[in-house]
Structure formats: C-alpha cells, structure tokens
Image 1 (cartoon, rainbow, N blue to C red):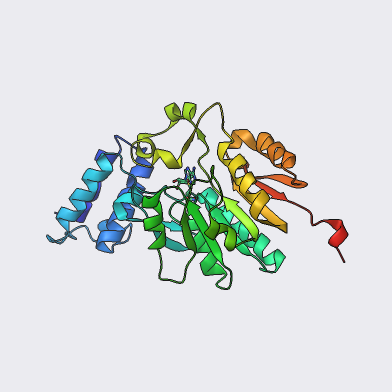
Image 2: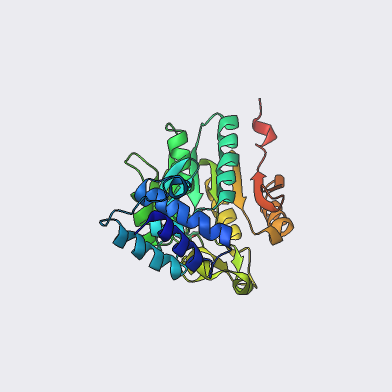
Length: 292
Ligand SMILES: C[S@@+](CC[C@H](N)C(=O)[O-])C[C@H]1O[C@@H](n2cnc3c(N)ncnc32)[C@H](O)[C@@H]1O
C-alpha cells in the first residue's frame, strides 16, 4: 500500500471522530513512529510504499484509534517534561498543565536549596515524581497512589534508582513508610478533580479509555482529595515546607480558603498557560520564634 493512500484513507476515517487537523496530526505521528517518515514524506515521495511487514501493525493501530482510544495509549507512551513515559489504560495520560506544575515544583525546590524530600500524592504514571527525581538526582522522592495497577507501571518507567512508590488511600492514615521518609519540603499533587456532572461535556476518548478513578470527584464534595492532602501535610510537611496542587479551574477560591483554614498563611492561586486558575501554592511561614 502506498504511504500517501494510507494517510489519505486514515485521515478521512478519523475525521469522523476528530476535527480534520487533529486527525491529520494523529496519522502523521503514527506514521512517524512506526515508519520513521516525516510529515511531508508522502508528498515528496508519492510512490513510497509501506513495507508489507509493517502494514498489519499500522492497520491495527488505526482500528484502535477508530474505537476512540487515545493516540498515546496506542503508541504506548506520552511525552512529558522532555521524557517519554509509558502509558496504558491503567494510568491517566499526563497533561500539559501538569508539566507546568512540575515547573512550579522545581522553582520551589531550587529556591529552598533542596534540603528535604518531596512527596507526590496521587502519582498515577509517576510522571511528576520521576521528573523531579531525574531532574534533581540528589533529592528523595516518595510517591503514593491507591491503584496497584498504576503503581506497577509507575515503578517501571525508568531504571532505578527512582522514587519510592507506596500504595495507599490518601483519605486514610499515613503509612509508616511515608512518615519515615519525611518531613517533606514539598508536597505536590494532581489528584482527581473533574466533577461527575462534567462527564457529559467530555469526549469519548477520555471517558471510555482513561481510568475513572483518576478523573472524577462527587459534585457534592469536589475538594475531597485536597482536604486529604492537607491532612497529610499537617503531619508530614517541614515547618518551612510548601504544598502545590493542580486544581479544577472552578474551585480556586474554595481550595485556597480551605488551605488557609488548615493553617497555611501564604496561599496563592496561579494561572495555567491559558490564563485559567489551575494551581494552588500554599506555604506555612516558619515559626518566627525559631528565625535567626
Ligand atoms: C488525575 S490522576 C493524576 C496522575 C498523575 N499524577 C498525573 O498528573 O498525570 C489522579 C490519580 O489519583 C489516584 N487516586 C484516586 N483516588 C485516590 C486515593 N483515594 N488515594 C490515592 N490516590 C488516588 C488515581 O489512581 C490516579 O492515578
């Protein structure tokens, strides 16, 4: 089969599910990955054929895409903070906003002189924990998730030494292993924050394929995971430590005031690249009696 024909047919089929530019982009990435071709190869080499040995795999990828499976699951990886993370249906596909969260975490780690370790709550694929561990090899990183399936994948992302992964429900008590590695200079979390009522507006590639456990919170308790993180922070955060959250854009003021009520004196809501309120940074000033 000619590459140009495969691309034309595939873009046409996928355009039933996605806007045409997105469909074209997906087919281009798929061909780049499986055939090593550029986005323009089929134009400058119109007689270029797809090798017979690769065609079945490409066609099977197309069938998966036609079931609205996300491209990253079909390829088996997602790009995040300059690295490739393995992803499959056990974990949420890391989002660009979360790369910004890592940027804020790293800013804080540099400013604090990297004295204490980092705790990543609701780690999923481990993208935050591994990024921080690999960018700051001297820092201990601990990462928690309730899902054993997610942790299995998270552990396998890169060769050891990596973060310490711990299975736990953050709505419950702090496990001894997590406590013993504290106190932490930074607690970071991108927990589930999509309201059940927001399901209706979501596309089927997310709804039918990404784990619901990673996405949704009840409409009547949207801050459930932030309260849980704050309770762990009360126990585990160093006196001059800081908490960083990714949040639902609808709940900036509520999340900030909940953190203030938990004793955090400096609380800011920060925007994402689209200007939407997306992050909360909460710090406890060190007790002035102990300042030099
Ligand atoms: C939004 S995903 C975030 C994954 C990853 N940190 C990221 O930014 O891509 C939320 C994660 O929270 C985990 N989770 C859900 N409920 C939890 C709980 N009660 N305790 C700990 N983790 C939980 C899910 O398994 C999922 O991996």
